[in-house]
Amino acid sequence: MDLQTKLSGGVTKIQQSIEQGKQKLQIAQEINKCRNIMEETAGKRAEELIKLGEAVYRKIRLGEIQDPHLLSLSEVLVELDKVLYQTKEKMEKLLESQEKGKVCMHCKQPLSPGDRFCGACGQPVAQEEEESDQYAACPRCEQFIPYPADFCTCCGIKLS
Ligand SMILES: [Zn+2]
Ligand SMILES: [Zn+2]
Image 1 (cartoon, helix red, strand yellow):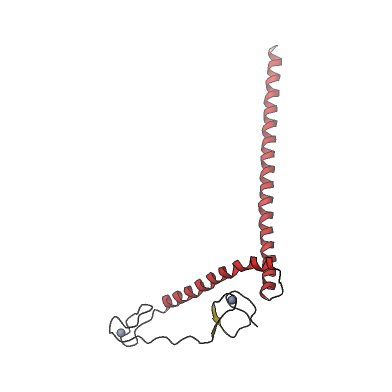
Image 2 (tube, rainbow, N blue to C red):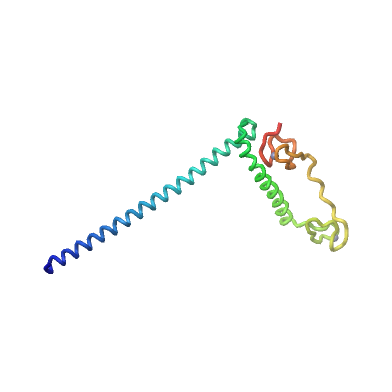
């Protein structure tokens, strides 16, 4: 093999490996594209499923769906709704007491939530009036909710 042949052989090899490198890069880019499309589509699909689920769940709450399998699937949501409802109530109370920290009506010293007597002057703390006695237990989730109402404010079932 003369030098010329050796050289041109080397060039060809370099060109081949550049070509291979390009191909590998292209394949990697295609794989990435596929991955992105799959992720994006799966995300959209999940969103659509949520919409479908919300629509079905609405019909369940209205009593328009009697399918036992769907009903039993929806039962899990009652417990989750209750946790959300009760936590929201608690948080609202906490936010309220954070905002307008109660003070003793006699000496104006700050009170802690639940104090029955003022720690500064010893006077009894006026108990807040019951917000309302218009409460009733929801027949489905058993949460105490403002009543009368058309729908349970906790689990969303239609109240007749
Ligand atoms: Zn006081
Ligand atoms: Zn309810």
